[in-house]
Image 1 (tube, rainbow, N blue to C red):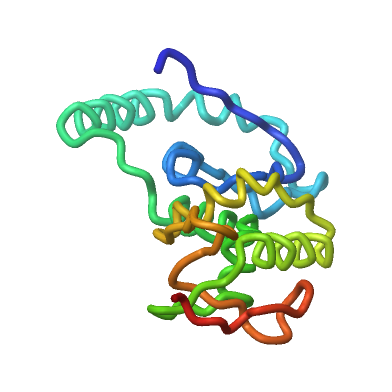
Image 2 (cartoon, helix red, strand yellow):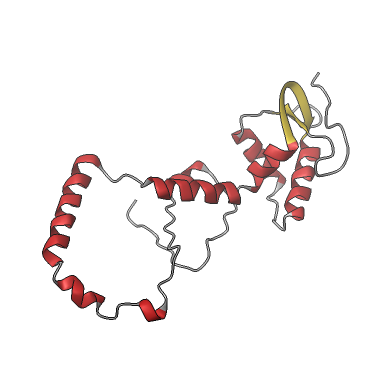
Length: 173
């Protein structure tokens, strides 16, 4: 990599995917407080001048530590990113709420996709294409049978979950 992209804004961006590569690369720096205008120190820069030697020493020590151990992500940033991606992962939420993993079970790929579309619609989200949905299912470790009607092996839709009624609890042949 030759560049790092920094985005500064008032709101976190909406992510359409929550893959591991993005999770690994994203760092969220939250500034949880605002200094009220009456409490702002307008001479802060001048006050720092007296601290320049200590600041330089701290920078040198940090560079030595970085050279020896590398750059480690602080736990607060790890926790913030984890919470953010949990909130952004519509597919993961659907999976947790509407899917049961069970060996020997299967459900129609179209039924599962329609359930996911309804789940997204309910939350004001836009569902991806059926092809992208299939990739997300495969990334969860489930095979999609290609003989006859496409079926997702090893899962069943939870009864009364989102989408049309169908063969939510059928068993695989």
